[in-house]
Length: 253
Image (cartoon, rainbow, N blue to C red; front, side, top):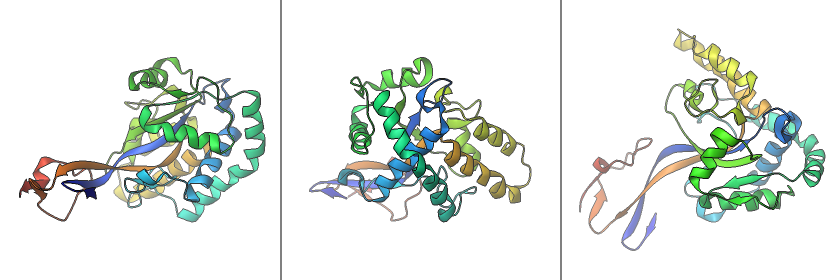
């Protein structure tokens, strides 16, 4: 990828692209039917190819929290069926947003998501829009005033328990907005495993709970990308590892 003297090196998935929905008590998305409807509405649009052109090279649409080769991932047919179950709640969900417009915030890089959500018929509040990254994190961790936050969350390699950092009970970046008891309970059970052969069957229920109880709408994965001057340096090997955007990947031309 690239133009002229600038080329781009693409590594593996480095971030989850998500829409955090505020499921705290007495908030709009404390209603799980609303969460499931929102998930179905968004993924119906994404599956119809509505991802902006500038993101098609760097973003893989995927509703599941685990990468295709990770343990704990569901069959695609099962995942799609769980998402589709939310479709029956969409009319009531959209009507409810007319009565109570949702507060949705993002940084400048995720502005397209606000426009995308509006295009699906969701009514947003007048103050929905772009805020600084610092302000978004304040909402995520401290104030919880938003109904929806467009955020990227780091992808952990290998062990499916890596998702604990984002949605586990005591995860390093867990927010009360996205805590769902069914998910946290299952993740705690997974941490007690001693046999590697049990991992896949122990974490499939985590995938199932994440789609059913929606701690966030998981849009997909964003690949790491590094731009470089192709007239000065070159990629020295064709094999690229996940998160492989290190300088040792390059050599002088």
